[in-house]
Image 1 (cartoon, each protein chain N blue to C red):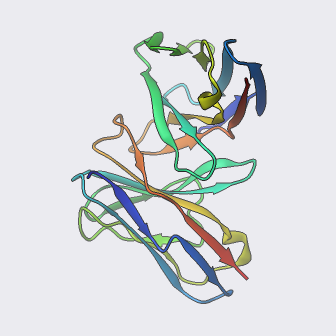
Image 2: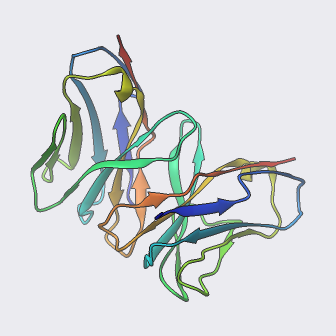
Length: 112
Length: 112
């Protein structure tokens, strides 16, 4: 099956700086890549996603890039704010049905 | 209000005592999934369903059962729970496999 690796596991940035989280996947047939944010004690919530026919997608301060050849995708958060502090998970949908594989998460801390 | 609900939210049980965690969504979603979340391992998919009476194994199905007799409900059954099934469980639903997955609030299970 698919294997998704996520780095770094923890990340601290100063408020206003940018944060980048990277994920790699193993199955070239994977074609949908969502990113989730999970605040402490809360449920995961989708923040952005990208499909395999798109190289980059942006939503205000958040952007995701996808390199299908290298099989990696990244989350970019610009002008970070304290409320961006959370655990972020990348995921890849396998080539069949509704099977999703998640990365192990990145704990982002934005220091005021 | 569109939502995914799970019950119970917290459960302490003993090894071997059958239990069911319910999941219900009111968004008429076709797709539903169960995940478990463990520290350092991220979210791992247990089972998923793409429609009524259609279910399939995720990445970690051993020791679990599911059923999808109605579109809105997707219960998770542990017929003989073991301590290694102690975890935080999330149910999720989506309109299709490339739409936002909405997660339930989570069920924290402790098996003694």
